[in-house]
Amino acid sequence: MAAESPAALPASLADLPAERWPRHIAIIMDGNGRWAQRQGLERVAGHDRGGHVVRAITRECARLAPIEQLTLYCLSSENWKRPAEELAFLMHLLEQYLVNERPIMMEDNVRVRMIGRREGIPDRVLYELDKTVNLSAANDGLQLNLAINYGGRGEIVDAATSLAYQVMAGQLSPGDIDERSIAEHLYTAGRPDPDLLIRTAGEMRVSNFLLWQISYAEIWVTDKAWPEFDEATLHAAIRDYAGRERRFGGLKR
Ligand code: IPE
Ligand code: IPE
Ligand code: MG
Image (cartoon, rainbow, N blue to C red):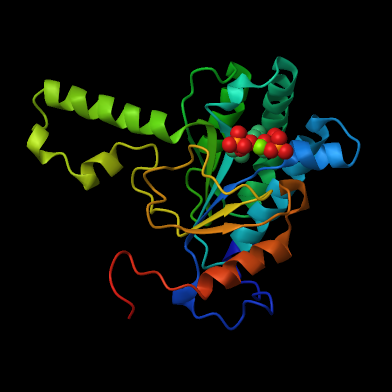
């Protein structure tokens, strides 16, 4: 299997000590529509192109052994405000992606999971999603978290609701609710927080992405739109991250 034979690291990253690498990278894949419009194309052509970049970047993260988790913002809970035709295209693209990428994910030993609310996602997309999630469940290489119909505030609401039910059932006392129990009720339960948050297309905002989990993530923004993002840009972000000093509220070491 490809993932078992550690491939050579790219020259630009070969000298980074293991502890300087981000273990979890989260990406706000933005700017598809603007990129397409700049080329004189329809917005959806940007989403189409963006899908190819998802494949390339996932493969690269699977190849770069120190990276354990990749979380991709595919559709926010606020993106339902977009025109019906664009949403229909996005759903079709997602469905195709889940079908076409399945053998590649298996070859790359990638485990796929979804974070977000299932309600509102068409059944045929959920069917392909579940199929990919189940098929890849035993893969122990890169963990790929697809954020679909995801909103950070909604996730915290869902966690609060689930904790409230536990209290009501007498399984939990309100005084026992702490950061750990809240984290355990998020969609990302059991997974580490992102170390590096990348956003493409220049916007300096988090757009309701992983609000709880990015408390201490290092943020890296590029002006490149998602369809222009490539392996070299990913390497540049990792390199930049490796040079940062994370203090977590403490003092310089
Ligand atoms: C990101 O690109 C993809 C999704 C949000 C689904 P956009 O569609 O937001 O592209 P811009 O930001 O309008 O250029
Ligand atoms: C964030 O991008 C959502 C995804 C990348 C899926 P948006 O394009 O929706 O963010 P805003 O509206 O510019 O904040
Ligand atoms: Mg956008």
